[in-house]
View 1 (cartoon, rainbow, N blue to C red):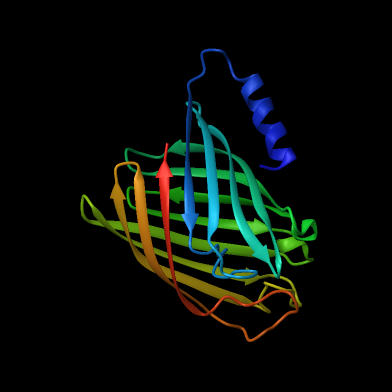
View 2: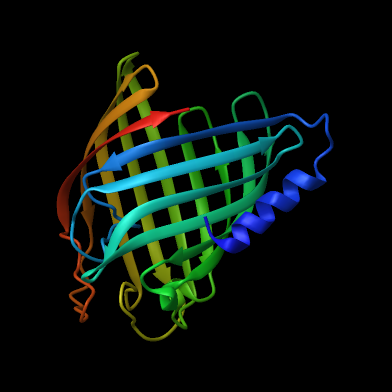
Length: 230
């Protein structure tokens, strides 16, 4: 978690009343490779991951995410801290909004922040994010995404994700399309108690741009992973 996210987390905990009801949850995972919005910024090696969430009964939440990854030939960690507010609309739908800060230990030049808002249902969620300096460049970017799952039976779920990254600025930068890039994922998730094993096929559009020290993730690739929720 970033220093900024850590300070925010500690401040939130200190300000919470003693009787506040805070739920702590998270997961540890190992993915065959780490992709972000349809692309990998380096070699496709196994990526260990950690997620931690703290949710207050009032609707406020803070959390963090960490993943091993390459940027070019340099291995390091992506650290993401986030905070926001969520409320229920009805018995099955809720909305949330917040901001996050993303930092890369091997390339702080690419650090950036963004804010988001979304809605979630029983099986489907949608979110829209905006970053004023995406990946540290002078690029204003929005990213819309929809994720869903469908239980075939209690031990077998179909999963799907679709996203569209849209560049609001003129110009191209490493990892940022001249105008738009889509990514989709379709797979299966099999739960075993607190464990989940996932296998998916990913596809993203290729704008044909190539940059030094920024390999383009294959347009089509299989990914798999295992996670443990606590």
